[in-house]
Image 1 (spheres, rainbow, N blue to C red):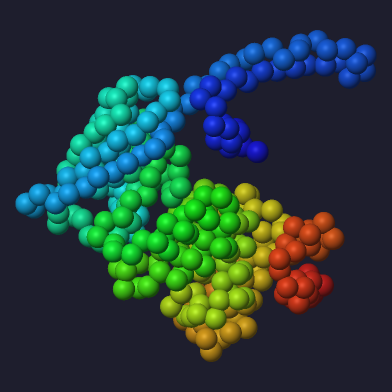
Image 2: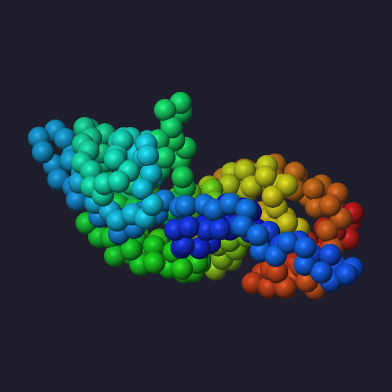
Length: 306
């Protein structure tokens, strides 16, 4: 587990890291749980955002609770559809309320993200991804949000397949773009949850009868970006990635445009799998037990040819 993941894994506002050193040969403890350093986390909770139109402006009133005051804090207001930073507002790190306004022309119906972060005078903040700590998703001029809210609850508890199925049911008339893909891209892939990303994509390609070429068109590009992070991928990730490309190829008539984008990636991943000398051990297959055995056999055929 990465150090940052260890920090995120607890809700404690203060974490103390200690060290213990033992002499294995003599079974003596040389240093026993000696504190090294502590981290105080700045945690934002119970975020509430009220909004109203006033002439040609949209006014937002944000309230929150926090643990651990911080200096030079700010709220960043992101448009999730295209990850655009619409507003950055300095706040007093010890207070729990702030107002800001945006030109109404810059606001359109859709999903937005309020993200609390440390202010950096030397650079603009990076997009934090969806479901980031110290943030809240808000909706503007969306009349029906029940599916989005249900999906968010499933997503937050780690039920990603169920969440994406709910997002897929959001009608296009809601005018919020491909929210299911935004969630996969910004909520899973962006946060390096590659195994979860692949599992959701496998479910869509294998089980979602409404997953047409228009939807699938976005998948090869995401897989290509994932392949560019090969050093972070495990063997089972590469196996599932190849299976996803094969599923697109099997349905050439249904995924005509998507297949054009998938073929170059297929030519990249097969040599990588061969070079890595991946073996489909029982242990590896247990890691991808959600995959149809017939799809696994395809990868076995590729390996045998090498």
